[in-house]
Image (cartoon, rainbow, N blue to C red; front, side, top):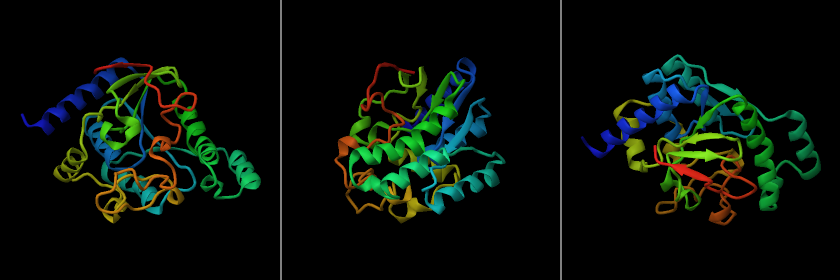
Length: 238
């Protein structure tokens, strides 16, 4: 068995265990490459894991187009969670539309309103959630495990692709004809909100285009943070 074949088998085993032991469970998809791999595995494997995405109101049109592409390709409609209009309006009125460029605090507050709060609603009543995070993605994710205790949401969190490399992700996508975000072909290995994401240059870190005006240590939106810090409370190998 090749290394990728073993990764796929291990990932399927993890998804199967989530579906059998942690129902109801949901997968938070950013609609980027890693998450499309998990979408493909979940839907083709018919695992009882719901899929949702956070529509922040500032996403690229190419990212939004992936919602329709998933529906066309798999016959599955991804659930969409949006920020509270009142909170967005208050932030913009008080700070300006693009205040997130002014400071890390302003950026994280924008992320809290547009991502963290909607995520909390999406996870209500769930026993576990799944992400497409990989250890190789960023300095902040070097200790990522396949299974973790999520202290922020008081549930188990799974990162089934933690051991996958970027090459593994793209090999799977090409071999299995998985639809993917067109921005990946335009120099965007990591994709977030449009004003906070840029294409990278050859040789740059894969997350160099995310919040490029900040230090690498601060480049998390808050979805995977407890009290402002990326903390691994308890990790268990899946």
